[in-house]
Image 1 (cartoon, rainbow, N blue to C red):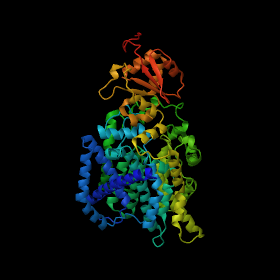
Image 2 (image 1 turned 60 degrees about the vertical axis):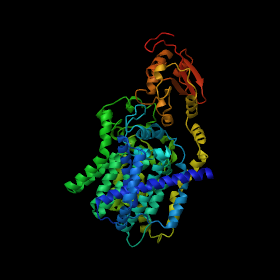
Image 3 (image 1 turned 135 degrees about the horizontal axis):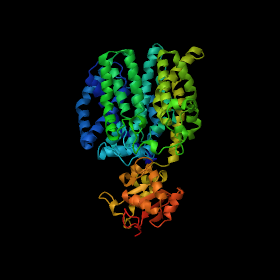
Image 4 (image 1 turned 90 degrees about the vertical axis):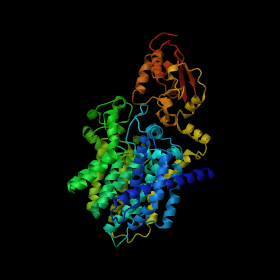
Length: 630
């Protein structure tokens, strides 16, 4: 048991430190606004603080000051500003939590398995392929165009948070931030539900928030995303905080909530392109309300100030502010999916396609998604499922349409679902919908129960909450048993990654060998004498960094390698030498004819390292520009 307790304890300390800094950063923003605020939800402050810290980390990275100096500055702010902010927060009646202490302790014990799940070394594909390389680049060199990465640029606010923790925690810090965002979203739903319950039935308390938070955390997909090095949990927190602040602005009329909503939308758009959907929809809603020039200018100015820099940078790097999407509008490049992703290489269910061009098929796919997300996971590459409660949840959402607020929320959910059809149909891209849908479903269920007259009172809300959270909790326990003991040393970590990642052991052994037989002198650099082309090994991008090249997209894409190999081993040697590659690695499961032909040719020495074949050029070409034998 000790191998779990010690790492979990350190993660708790790190999470608490990040939590305090984020709360301070968010409180400072509202403190500087100097507006009299009543009932500000603590998780809204946390969302603003996390977004602010991520932005500060990116700016510090660009200035070359990310590291100990930035942490010292943050701690000084904590010392000199903390007392004033605490007094302000107390005077503003900040709502930190309505949980009973016993409920809080029970929830913490219940969520301990999720904390353990986030303690394992990162092994998920997208995190290893570009999220963690982005964060490592921010730590070492600042924001840059990573030519060796499948998607060399993206909005990187969450990666800024990863980079902030990187020197202290390492790659596991990325998972820590996403877990914090997942729990903060549950906390926000708890507070938001309390606000709605007071608006709907001020004399009869209804545990809307408790059940909405439990329904959110009861999704295995939510807890899985909250324990891996992705950015979707951070995006969802910012979107949910923006919608909460918008709701508070509509009901109170206080402009501070309007600006807070705009800030969270800016942070969402700086996290992922999907955030732009909510920017467009809420901006349109604001324009229709005709609030006046000043509120509209503050709204637009806040969003642009917090997110616009990323899109200008991406445009400057690629000529497409939404790279690599919408190439028909902005133009294509060597990294555009149109060059590599075809119907033959990607299941139709997850291809990108326009709603209007696919019409009826898209709507049928949308209607079947709740079933497929639970019972037919092959469509979504066996990602974690949604909760089985999603089926009655949809019916309850429709029942909530009897309220004006419910109709507006339901309309937003429907718009986003239609928008999702025009994107890559990945089930986790629906994550920003789930918090609002959970709250709406609980509201609909409560209305149904009240109108039926079959029950009186809500005597066991915790029991209902436990039933709602059970699927996610059970899935977490299953994943812990599947992964085995938590790695607590460098040796156990390497062994764990060897088991989890195809090619990790072989590449680790290759890099540990002396490379006297490598004859490709142009490949030798001061950083490393080895430059490896990994065929279908993009998931090793983070562990091995710039040593590894090759990918589905970009100039070094697999299609180019295959075409050179079909031209013969001499053609392939010429290509590898021009790319300064010393070794070609191919999984042993790869049985394509081009690979067998090259492996049995004259220009390579082949060696098996378990799950990989290593091909080393032998110097059969006198010069890379000539086709002569040596």
